[in-house]
Length: 409
Image (tube, rainbow, N blue to C red; front, side):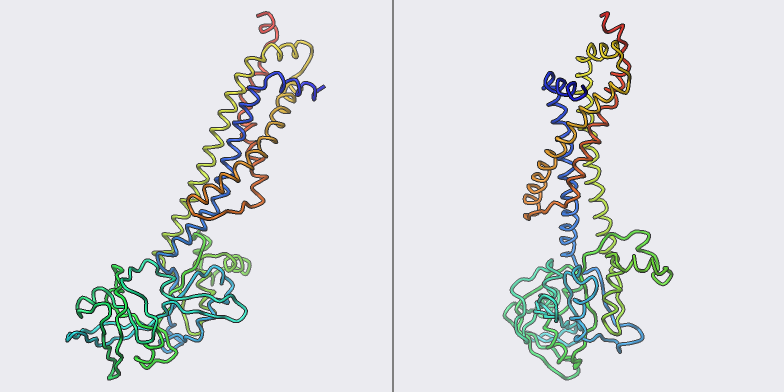
């Protein structure tokens, strides 16, 4: 009998059923799309933020290392627990040098670094590491050094020396000289404009520090810091430490790197790490808010459609009550209708939402997105939430109908 009533209800009121169905599909599809791209957006935004500079600084410890780190230890950074989160790193070796060019002399900093070094680590995929990867925001006029005697000069230093692309700068450190060809002028708006950047191996020879580096900048994908992530690892229990170590906080990734670099001390660059965490939290909150708003709007549309349908069905409900139907039997009919529409609407909403997420991902990030499995039950649950939230007021109205008043007219 219940099946027959449900069948007749759908066949006699196709327009109202279609309106409810469309409302549920819209809510489920928008929720699926927003939740589907939320993880993608967070990942893409994290990658974009990595282009604004490294978020971990590796320096010699006060106890070990003699004031320097070992270049031979650098490949170990790509072997740590969070190696896949490390998007790049570059070493630096600093020294004070006397520069001369075009008859002018200036004292400044010579910085040896990797520009784009092909790094091969046993058991790992080859990668390219260097300043070009972790600092793409550098504005370099000209080109990047390719040979051992080529360099790029900071804009401020180049101006004082009167250097130009194609010219030469001679660097002198404790009587040892090195002649560099200027292949580029770098503008950053920061302290880099006061330095000359040369290949690390050449700078090591000039400073007579073979195999040494002063510091390493590491760029890593991390999760936003929370109260637990800010706790001191030394005061954690064993279980807390394992949880902290296995979560990609900037502090735990820094600890990973510190463990493989002998005589090192790794610390987060908090100005960058905290700004990234705050932005990603706000972005995730925005996506959640938009999802909730979409579901609320869909529930209101469902409620409006069902209220109009209930007004039309008042005589039918009154007749059912007059012949003995109780509150539970009437509720079963309307809940059954809602359940059927929800299941079908949730499946259709999932398919449409998956396509919508793909369109947004291709349009905004120029990349494809693979929907996680959990989005399907999420779409079904979203459809249920929309349908039942929108059915509460109409169902209460249906149960409050008095047969005598309605049937008497």
